[in-house]
Length: 97
Image (tube, rainbow, N blue to C red):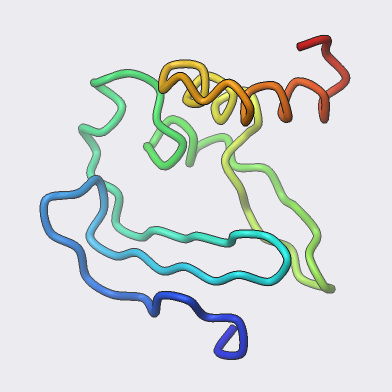
């Protein structure tokens, strides 16, 4: 993803994971690695072990990428007050916002 890289994979400190990276190719693409096991104790978290255990494959440019399930992403958006994002997820899955 060097051609669309925004933030190279770098170590993080004091965050939910030890590594983070970001790219943009008509959509924001973020990835984390070595997520801390205790992240789920504070409520829903799209990168936590619970979400990781239920990752769903998404096809992208001939590749399969494992992503957090939409119901977890929706819970996170609602918990954080991200109403536009929650509405978009609800519309995508066919629910009324």
